[in-house]
Image (cartoon, rainbow, N blue to C red):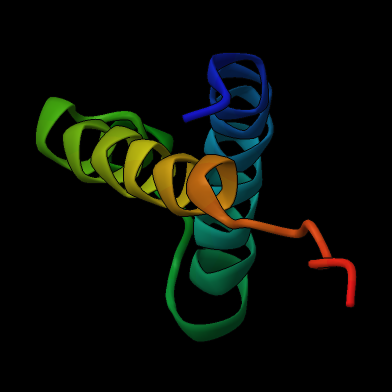
Amino acid sequence: MNWKKFFIAALIFLPLLIAVDVIYDLIFKQLIWKETFAMQNLFFKIAAALIGAYFYATLNNSNPKK
């Protein structure tokens, strides 16, 4: 696994997931900042960011030579 890609992707995915949640709250319901940054909500965002970063870091983009 490429650890550098993993950490960079995790640092990119986490704010992206928080931004998507804020946009979703603005569109479909009332935005409550206390609920957005609640521990349970952040736990699942961090877990999703780490899982996404894992898949991104283990993705093999090399082309085999023929």
